[in-house]
Image (cartoon, rainbow, N blue to C red; front, side, top):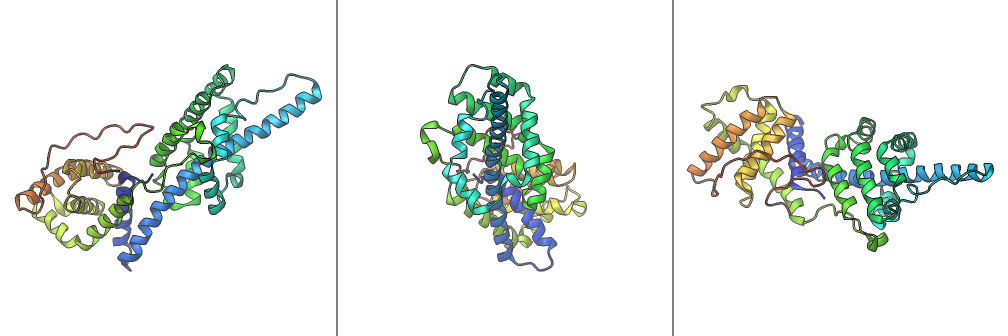
Amino acid sequence: MINRELIRIKVVQLTYAYYQNGNRNIDNSEKELLFSLSKAYDLYNYLLDLIVAITKVARQHVEIAIARAQREGTEMPSQKFAENKFALQLEENKMLNDFVSEQKQVWEDNIDLVRKLYACIEESQVYRDYMADTDNSYEGDREIWRKLYKQFIQDNDDIDALLEEKSLYWNDDKEIVDTFVLKTIKRFDPQNTTKQELLPEYKDPEDKAFACKLFRATILNADQYQHYMSETSRNWDFSRLAYMDVVIMQIAIAEMLTFPNIPISVTINEYVELAKLYSTPKSGAYINGMLDTIARYLIDTGKLLKPIGEPKQKAQKSIDKPTQDENTK
């Protein structure tokens, strides 16, 4: 699940923290980096479990409505949403249940939020359309949860506030992790029953190695990389550069020099986007120009042995599939 985009974000955060911390210890910082990435995987499982928690609340509402209907002799309520085939399969999923039992983080501890979510869902048009539809297929049950997740969970201030309370590591993770939850919903197959595989923490060991190698190269070669910045900044006001910009460019240079299979244009585009996210409003354009100049300098001096190519505007991210560079597994 953890991809290069998320790794780059974490490396930026941990590198900045490393320099802000007076007691610099690269081994401890690397452990912190890996722990931070593992917490993103915890969030992935925790958000999947939210679907289960909402379904359980729906089931409780139906049970109360059934008892009332039996008592009053009125029409029985529909159990369609409470018995949603996809949600029931997810509830019985072995990998998810193992996570819940190990982490002991359950949504029942925040049941008021879960009930509020269910109430919003129940009042929505997408829910009413689903309940009125005579389609009882597994595909329909899976699709309704994809729609509900996007509408009620993906951009939800209450959920964001709760997650921030539970873990500081989750502050910047949810947007990316949401895409993996949606991807997981789409790939569920009823034939896999309880053994449906969730996304692994790392699809390939190379991704975990990428995180450690990028972080160490950034720190251990800092003086050399900052020398490249100063050598190529004659046309730029390097002295007024924001400190976060220096960190971001330092990591970008580390990636260009350490990973020959990642195109230079991909590296530049990725860190320009991170600059827009974490630094000043003008940082994106500044870093784009600086990194292009630095890359050409490294090529001209024989330090970088790959073509620069032409930077392209980063494509808009799909809601169901995160973008990946050409070296992502």
